Image (cartoon, rainbow, N blue to C red; front, side, top):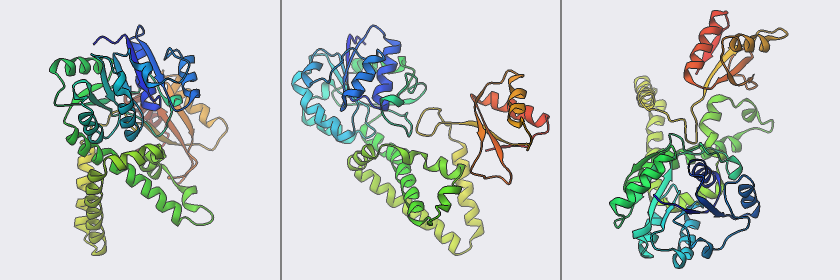
Length: 365
């Protein structure tokens, strides 16, 4: 895929990461971008990710071979309309939105189906903005492509190979199937996480007891509630029907479990959790996405001077690099514990075996 000039409208976490990945793999490509803030353009230019130093107008994208829309879904549609007069022949337009139906309908009404392929990188975090972006965010992450009825086989294959060259794993699917799938595994979980956080905030006491003792389980399940409110406002508006349908299904599932608990149906309660465990255990968790896989263990901390240094020395002397280490303040365990995070699964396995060899009590999640 020939891309002498690539344009970005929006340089947040995903747009910035995609631009950095392209800059890393294709350093000869001229990348230009605009943003809602001059500061973002300044930062990207200083890092050498983009070549322009000012906010751009739509006409400035008229020489681009590829234009990537990286704003919230409804904003992308507005920019698409403004871009139409300046799109040169042969230019490909794509987006990174997590809802595809609305923009595909707009593409169709604007007569741009021949030059549009929808895109959705299944990667991200609770952090937002260009400062949080990284050239490796897309590495081994699924990147869904949603072609139109007029997308040629040649254009789709070219773009698929381009995305694969950035380290992502491209998947091609219909935009409707995409919206149902992402509503299930992304949009609904974000709503549940935010609802749970709001429930705790509203029911906590004046001493903030629940906030104080909130530990790993609560933090893990609600981490994504820290994502951009504006982005999720747009997602709920754009994928409204799918989200409402799934919220009804979830409410029914919650009601079913409530019935089991109310009737003290121990077998049904156990089976409820067992089915969830079996399906969850069968999922191959990617390291890319809002909740990244963490290789961590928890070790009882001996109450003596140099306790942390002793553990660090044991691991270091066996060529094991520690990614993160610290005392766990929210006590899930009876005693204070040391939280140890490693870089990968083999390192964690070796660390646990080694510490147990030295008679430390080690807990794994």
